[in-house]
Length: 205
Image (cartoon, rainbow, N blue to C red):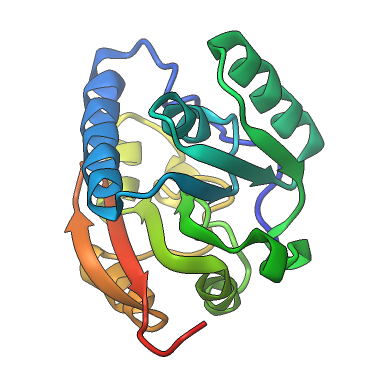
């Protein structure tokens, strides 16, 4: 269930494209809303990529540990955090290699990761072991994601599928998937993603 190495193919957080910026504004608004519901002061981000969400969390006073399996990507995230003046504990590790007992967290953030893993069910089980009690997860909403890629002329040979995306969920499909391991509490649909805040099932952990 290894995560895709090397960070994002497209820097959606740093894009100057006006449409992309509007979409990311909606994404971050939904993320902040769900963070407010969780109301935690510590978080673990699994698959932090370039570190943008980890930095956003740290800037609001959350104590953040962020993990990423790719060395170059996590070094870039460290540099970006330093430039932004926030303290984050970064670890180069995969979800499989994490010490679950040591890394359990009040909130686990796993955004734009699950579409890349070879075994999403195994990844969800691992996230359930790490979350104490909250999980905040997002994935591209299909088939809308691929349709929008094709509308902008991207990835026509793969019918709009972004390279590295091996799992695909509709909004309801992703809610049902997360519900297999957690109690789904809140859902947001910032175009073109599905974002879920879920809680550890009672009696679990």
